[in-house]
Image 1 (cartoon, one colour):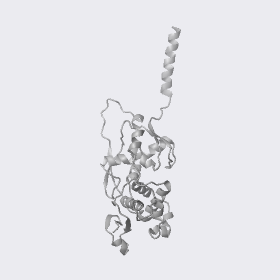
Image 2 (cartoon, helix red, strand yellow):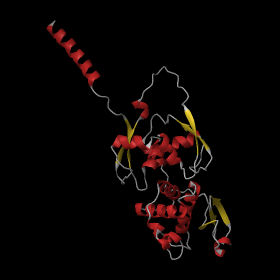
Image 3 (cartoon, rainbow, N blue to C red):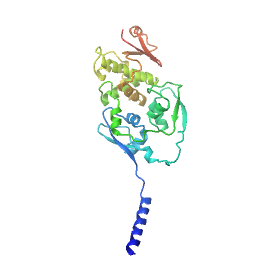
Image 4 (spheres, helix red, strand yellow):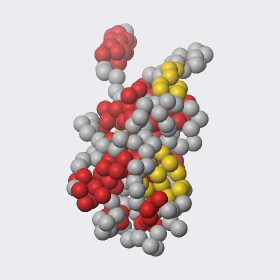
Amino acid sequence: MLFFVRFKRAVVLLCLLGLLLPTTVVYAYQYTVVTGDSLYSISQKTNVSIEQIKSANGLSNDLLHPGQVLNIPDNAAATPTPAAATPAAAPKSTYTVQSGDSLYVIAQKHGIGAEALMLANSLNSTIIYPGQQLIVPLVATRSATPMAAEVSRSAKRPAIPFTDEDLDLLARLVTAEAGSEPMSAQVSVAAVVINRVKSSVFPSTIRDVIYAPNQFSPVRNGWINRPATASAIEAAKEALYGNDPTNGALYFFDKSSSNSFLRSLPVAATFGQMIYAYAK
């Protein structure tokens, strides 16, 4: 009888301890940062917002380094729903794209991943334009059982090899040349530099292309040394990972240019006040 009483007390004590213990954060898996990764790109791959990733890993800024291991929180496990409940349609709102906006910026404003924004609007690329109406899901969803190996296999390869210094320099050129232009124009400026690196006519590195004599006015006037904007960094990343709205342009200039050589080139695309051209 004494043993039975002690056993009941032990069971009750364990139950009370279970109620008092704090709830632990549930992680879906861990992700190892590779060269070229950013919080934005990882957010797109995992469909977990940047703020959630930063919070789960105690990050105070957006800096990452190759080899760093990140905990990816499992939203579904953190906020379970009753098994018998019928899923309701996710609430949505609309957003009108403003000049200078990017999917990354809009997603951050609404606390969701850029991939969720693309999915809600059936977008095949991240290019958007001022005045465009976007559906913004207020609750982001993602696959129930993501696997780190699947994320790694699905990651895009860069169009050319690059370092963090290359990314910063390219983003600074985008800022200086098209900082006030729409996102498509900014991506296109970066794409022109990458197209030159891939061409046999121009130098073979981002730095050498940008600092080639008499090519880019920001190098001559010193604007290349100004810090890059967030949208320019995102534009540079877009181009480095293969997004080229110009389809191979090697030159760009604004509509006010009177350069007879540039004006004689076949036009590839026009975004904002910027014109992009092929070689003759």
